Image (cartoon, rainbow, N blue to C red):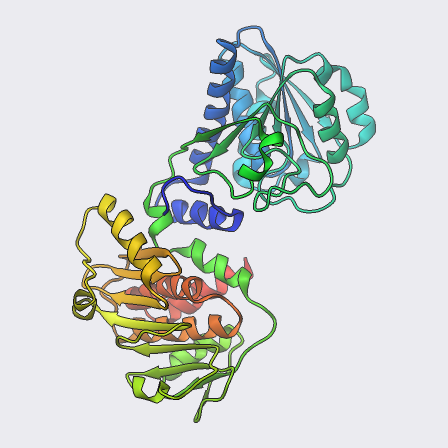
Length: 423
């Protein structure tokens, strides 16, 4: 949403999930990622025919990208070896499993070794030492802290090689959000990062080498839509501590049930300091009420830590145009979002717009919202705010569920919320 600026690992996970929801299968993104890695190696060397290339893979999606890259490199004539560090039975996703099975089937063009232990690694040390290129596909954006064996030894073995070292998405062992190295980290000559650079990469230039940003087919809509990835991201932000929610205007029982699912027990009556407050259209009730954690209203109100839900006519009076080409939306909405002290949710005739915190997001699924959808938007936002989720992410997650309620009713919304909570 900010051009090619940095992105956190949690944001990237949300975008991946939204892309799949929009119809772009994760396995297609993995295929494109692997093809990009192979292309970079090919272009860097000016060809790979006969080149000894070892792809060192983990059991997650980063390893899946590596398996796909190995297949493409073999197709380009390279002498390819794949080293899977870990137990094949613990390959975590169907996409990575599919690509591993493909590598297993390529018995003539790819040599495959399984390294379940440091002893296994020691037995194939010569393979990595004799390689001209080593592709690091051990860990992606999920790694934090000290690295266990045999992965730690695998990283050290890669670093001891004189080969050209190419990291897939980020160098294994690097914290993608901070650029810090908690234990050991691959020292890459080239890093091929996907879609957008991760936040920590600029601070870790010594570990990344040359940084190449590779588009892998994620549609722009995956970043700007309120989708299931944003709901999952918000649920992961929830704290155990629950702030009190006070309703100065009532909500229907179905909406209260959604709040209960998120651990919230709203009360009616007088608001006190530290509460999450819902004032509805009684914006006047917020006057003189200080010390609330967050407040939510229906109508135009400008105050920090406040979420205003307005319609398109009110948005127009604020100078917000809902009908623009995408390139203008990036420029205009980003600027307006940075100008607001609070968060503004605009319910439109064909799509909704969320602005604030220097970010913006849209939703066109199940729009325009009906009364049930609006109540879902309010209830879920309030519950997430009470669980410590920031206002923008809370409203974005709620906006996704609000569309489901409008399209399919409360039962479908409850089922979707339960699915993601239990996944």
